[in-house]
Image (cartoon, rainbow, N blue to C red; front, top):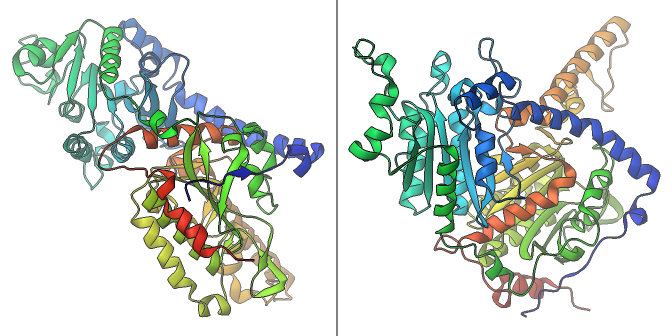
Length: 576
């Protein structure tokens, strides 16, 4: 069967949610997203106007200005890792974004990963988590086979915190191993050196295919301040490792250029020489088409209160082209939706949790709650994942999950084994996986739905995301279970003891709820980026197009005539 049976899904917003409820949810979401967006603006400002002016006084651009000039006109960067180290202090200092900017940007109609030292934050120094953030971006480039571009302006490790950045499996030195792996796999790497490039900062660009230096740039293992006699000889770091040395003597750099703008133009020219994107080839005659229903409506369709439900199909209808979708195996495991739609004209798989009450195949008259993984749903997702992996279809996971089914029946049905089957599928795939935590991301369900420990290429969160083993109140009940009855009520009749236990439970609940803040997860690199709900479609478009950009032995996408999904559909369809 060559035809992909995409059918219309979703309804006009007023059909599924009245105006008053929609406005109420949007109003409740607004301050939560405003808090995230305000933090983002602050991070984008680095150490502030004073330090931006210092950069400009040297006739240099800031890192963000360099990125703006590097990417195609009228496009925007899709930055990830924005909130790394947010809220952390090192002595009296903060390191916004860990002092480095990592983003997906479009250059000459090709998606690239850019890594740029923020020269408004301690002259682009490496702070705790800076190496891990750089390596994360290198991994994105490696797994999608995207060109990786380094905009280097780095004063080396921030030495007072060196013990947190120098050693360990993901210490600063691992950046250079990632440089080597990218090179070994033929992934283009380009480097522009704009200023300070000391110690590890000096090593980072060297393995790149082409290295440019401005007249203000230098690369040194140790700067003039550490070289005996440099002061008396009136040597500067520029004398020791500037473009005169590395372009004309050592050969550690390829080209010297007068200024930032010229260097950026050279990088753009190099990217233009690379093979063009294969995305249009895979689109065929199907161009990108917007959903019938506006993606911005997602911001009012998903309730802020995680205990309230919504229709998952309405969210998908605002993500896929023309609101057309092929749901597979709809008759089993109804707590899960799996299927295929086009995003930006390119086939994309989706796995999503249904909310509300779901029919129970074992007890038709007793529905069970959605947002939980049961045996049939787990098996369905495993089969879908393996088919998409065989067919080369990238998958977007949309999480809103409370966990696995529990209890005597669940254990007797072998839920542990079914869960292991899904974990195996999620651990051994080759096609690109991406994850978004819409609201709840709880317990082992977070793992099974391809959470960060299962290495999605990128994991997104929203202002509503709640990442934890269990909710605060549930954990408080578990912690004080011996003092509660079967209805989870405090057993003691002593009013002083009751008040003390209730206070202790509230303290636990409050602490756990604070830990579930998406900014905490993003600061710790437990999630890659926090996005606005109305931007979800745009992010998926970028990630999917980047997945289809490269044609090489690491990535293949079968034509729909020979999809395994057709076999799965035919063999499991209920016959009349």
